[in-house]
Length: 175
View 1 (tube, rainbow, N blue to C red):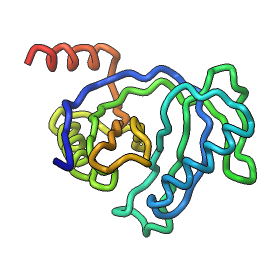
View 2 (tube, helix red, strand yellow):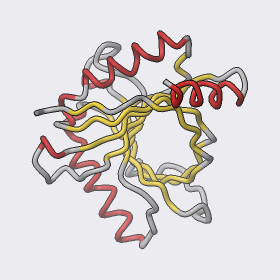
View 3 (cartoon, rainbow, N blue to C red):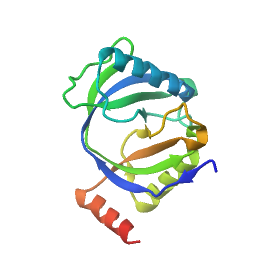
View 4 (tube, one colour):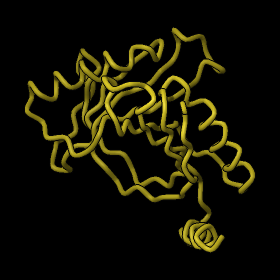
């Protein structure tokens, strides 16, 4: 089976510090860009605290593939000082607390479209509004067979108040 879709969940991600690499162009560069960031992290001896991830600021539905803007990143320890983009497009910054709807996609990363569609449909049905760029967390590495790849897809949401996320989570648990 190429894909195993999990349940949609709501989560609050606390503020985090990341080291990132700005990217432009086709997403097929993703493994190479992660490797480039890996090399920098290793050379600078920066401690990462989680798996590689990506932030996607636009999609091929919005711009030509050469105009795609995205970042690969790793969470790092909060004591890393912020650094603006270097000439190589690498920096360290803080991301704010964010509320996400998320779904795990198992199968080829290149075939995650149906998981995205399911998540976006659920967001619309539940009356939420998307609050920013989409995020992917690469739970497994790119070197494994595509049917074993797993990623978490996160879409940030606007919440009118913090109780809304708790109420929705409780209602989901009861169903």
